Each structure stands twice: as structure tokens, then as C-alpha cells.
Length: 208
Image (cartoon, rainbow, N blue to C red):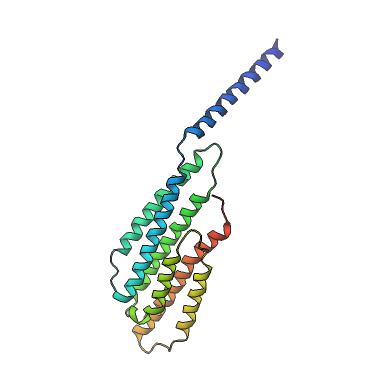
């Protein structure tokens, strides 16, 4: 009698587990797939990065920063929202989705914070046009090649070339020149960090 009841309880538990599994699978089938939207968000984010980098380059020639700081804040908000969407997309599936998009948005979020530091450096340079030629080219090249697939190695090599050029320049002869040179090197250091964030992400080779 007790043995029959035990087998009956086991059968009931197994049945409940099977029903739960079926519902979980059905939920995965009918739950909207956000992958397309996440990819579109990714494309939009990269487009905004390119625009910001170009605007930073133009600042070196015209000293008109425009609304680039506001664009950075808007981009940061959009990335945060996209990262949250990616997290929900990953957590809602019984068969867990890869962490690629959540990690990608986290990487871009870190890059925006570095760009904000770079902007502050540029704004403190008193004669940006004097130093602008090589940094302008560096920013434009980065904007033109900015993409998900770019591992950043070529950009890092170009940053090192600019470092060498500025180290070979005559020493500053006035306080403003000295301060500009210090801001310039800090800018290049931040720029290097900006690219290294992406290079590290590329090395992880996270599956989509």
C-alpha cells in the first residue's frame, strides 16, 4: 500500500515537472526574439560614436564643440537601455542565450565614459589648431573604421606614431604651451584606453 502511494507521488511529481518543462518550452517559442532589435541598437550606437568622433575632430579646427557633450549623455542613456534589454533577453529564455550583446553594450558604455574624459582634455587645450593636424587625422581614421569587427590594433599603432611625433617636438617655452602639451598627452593616453577597451573585447571572442 505504502509502496504504491510512493510510486504514485513520484509519478505525480514527474508529471508536474513535465508540464512545467512544456510550458517553459512554449514560452520560449512564443516569446518575442529581441535579437533583431539588439542588432539595430548596436548599429545605431556605432553610428553615434562615429558622429561624436568626427565632431571632436572638427573641434580641433574650429574650436566649436557644439552639442557633443549632450550627444555623449544621450548615447550613454541609450546604451544603458540597450544593455538592460540584452540582459532581459538573455534571462527570459529557458535555453540561455549567449552573453554577447550584454557584454558588447557594457564595452561601449565604458568607451563613452572615456570619450567624456577626452573631451575635457580637448577643451582645456588653449591652442588646439596648433596640435590639431595629427590628432584630427587620428580621430577621422577612427571614425571611418569604427565598427563591431575592428579589433583596434591598427588604431593603437597610429596612436603610438602620434606619441612619437609629439615627443620629438621642441620643448615648450611658455606655461600655456607646457599646459597644452600635458593635456595633449593625457588625451592620447585616454584615447589609447578607449581603443584598448575594444581590443580586449575582441580578444574575448564571445559568441553571438
